[in-house]
Image 1 (cartoon, rainbow, N blue to C red):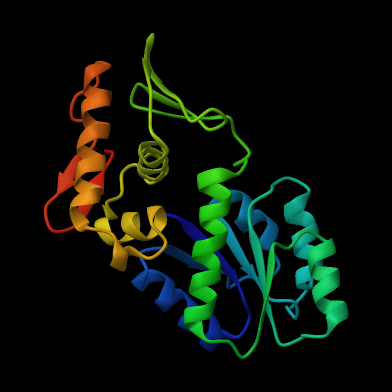
Image 2: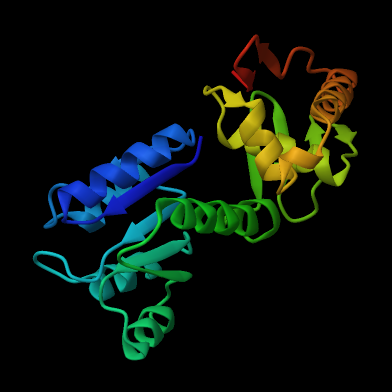
Length: 224
């Protein structure tokens, strides 16, 4: 489950965003102490940050620079300051996108999903591998291994495994997987996901790790 950090001092807007993110099965964290945004970022290690410009203590421009000093995590500015200079400054300091207030929550969610797909399915995540329960996934080559056993993955199998490994310990819904793998799941047969999951399971089991991916009936899948 992706963790989203919301740095927004308008409590109504922050709560609205958090509620929408929760419905989309993200893990939403709202900042309440604006003196310690940097410390909270380090402790949470979010997968994406939503950042307002006008904040108590230090503004969003300051905090994006602090974040960029240690991390390449995706950052989306959400602000009523919508001049060209504001947008240019935000992007030059390291933001990945800019959303003007007032905004439609559906537009914000779409931008978050698109940025997460680009960053965590195809981009450099800041680490070369994911390792969990005896399985190693190489994020540079898309290959997996269990001990000395190599596991050759298709593009979709790699995406599925990466999402499930990142969310290990949490159930990932079929709807979320469909959305992340196929941008418009309305045009994908639901059985396509089942086929890809079963094929991935067999490959991992053949490498000596049976039952690596569990089914949660009526919910989705989990790597425990």
